[in-house]
Image (tube, rainbow, N blue to C red; front, top):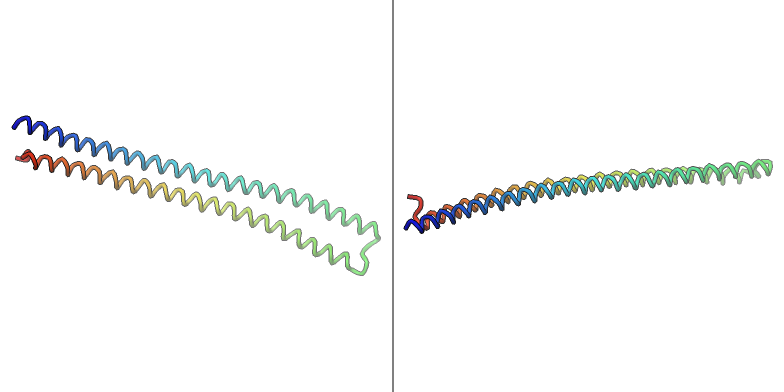
Length: 161
């Protein structure tokens, strides 16, 4: 009977220890998933910033090209002595409006890139928090299960006397 009791005690202890190790593993996995999600969020923000910087560079380049074009146009108008019947003026006004729209479009693209990065980062952070929470629940369930198994072992072998 003593050997059975010792075996039952060892089995119950092993069940509790196993549950503890499993719970700790789940807890650590949740922390790792949350850390990975934070990293992914940081990458999403960095990618958005890089895209915004690229769009800014395109906007700067476009602004330079537009200034050069306006300068050439002004020189051509001056060389011809002015505008014939207002047609040049209308064309220049239309082109100036289009240039402004091009700059506005680039600003819009930049804003979209930054907002997209923020949204992606928030989704990643939420996923990390969710993973951490669910693994904590799993860790608690593992502990409870292990304690329950230990109690069953004690009941089976009459150890609870």
